[in-house]
Length: 185
Length: 163
Image (cartoon, rainbow over all chains, first blue to last red; front, side, top):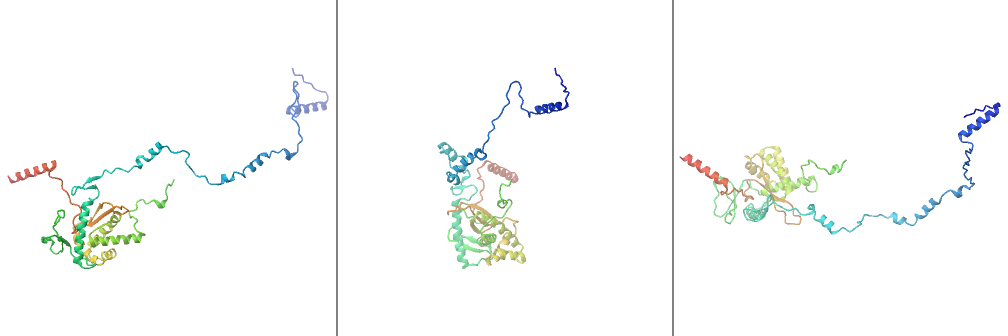
């Protein structure tokens, strides 16, 4: 039961109100039910002596010795030896093997091997040699450089007469029998 | 995100880079065209032969206009360094190719060069040249089923026409 006490003296009432306000705000040390208010120790210490500087000092003194190890350039290196299984898998991967060629055929003329899209080496060498001999005859006939004729040319072998349709052409004669693969037309 | 430099992309470029410079490339091709007109069959790396083929065929197209044409004569004068070949071009090659609309050259690949570089080689020749032929056209053997049936059909038609 709250009992309102109204003091007859106004100054005493004002003082009581001020004290109650301070108690409410916690500015007054209050003892409730026998608990003592907590008092911290009030130490009087000198400023610079107790400021913790030990951390910075310890850091600065220790970096002078290992600076050589941290300033050189470290490069990547393998940590473990690669096992033979891993090595074999890498070396024998299909992308690293040589591709098998499946475009090799037999030349129907001479029977040598040739690639499908390439001329037969033996047959081409045969034709090249015959061309070289024909060009030697042409050179003998022309006599010198820059004497290209202004008419067509026809090549005749032993015992051949120039056909009628090749009437006005320059004739180059080869002293051998006509080869079977050089068809006259 | 751009993954390659714009200078290293060559999409759609048709001309190969040969020789030391663009002028050197033209000189190289000019020498090859002169050699082709003189010898009518030359053996050269495939890239150069392929590059030269277009220029040779266009030169023959110009020559077909006739030697009175000013542009044709200027082209022949530039492209043929040996001037006796200009006469051969207008008097021999132009009449030879007059009935043909295009395709005056034949480009065939030959086995790689024997030297250290093993370069891809080709032989390019003008059609209708007097030299021995490089490839003989092969007809299918007469013993195949289709050819035997066609032969029988031809004989039946002849017998029906004779009777």
